[in-house]
Image 1 (cartoon, rainbow over the protein chains, first blue to last red):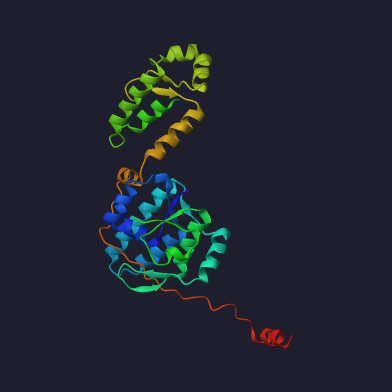
Image 2 (tube, one colour; image 1 turned 45 degrees about the vertical axis):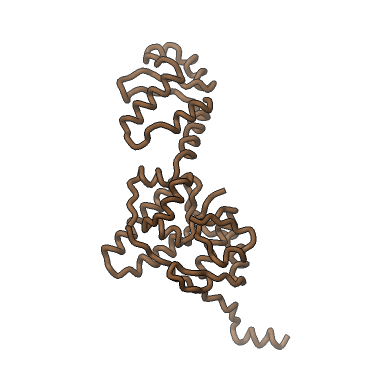
Length: 143
Length: 130
């Protein structure tokens, strides 16, 4: 049973947030999982950075982190089991509050990440969100 | 291979390579007995191999850092699992010299639901007429 990073938690690790640093200093490395969908979401954001040096720095940092998770074979693809979980989540009202405080509904891609956690019976690593209590069987670890 | 050996293994200094090799060599000597000479290992290889298979790893003498260890696959798997489980993500990132960017990126969360399957017009008419 692993700990699947939410995409925002992945981004926070790349940025070096103190909150995630405390969490991963107490979490066994071989338990940490990253969804391939999260990697895609992170790359989408990174590609939009106009400053070339900043963009390259984030790209390299993401690649370094993914390489480490890959050594533990913990980059998780999106398969049929995940897809079936995702289909259920698509019909649900899942409110999300961004770090900026802006409220919205959880995006399609982030629902795929949540679906992956459910499919693997993993704990989703994400600060507490309003949508968490609406998803049955979803386990959360808040860094 | 017992729990005390594995416990000492988890306490080895990981960040400095020379210190790690020296501590590893001392650990194996402490638990596996005095190192064998190359000739001694060769002359008694069957017995040495049997001991390693039975859970008692054997160390063969060499220059510092050049010693070799005969260990069964099962014990090697146990060592690797034990070492891996003791490593936090933080320590692995430190060992890999992972350097965060120092800047936070934030996801833009917006939910754009699928509108459903759209049928071609002729098929829609046939379905409606049926």
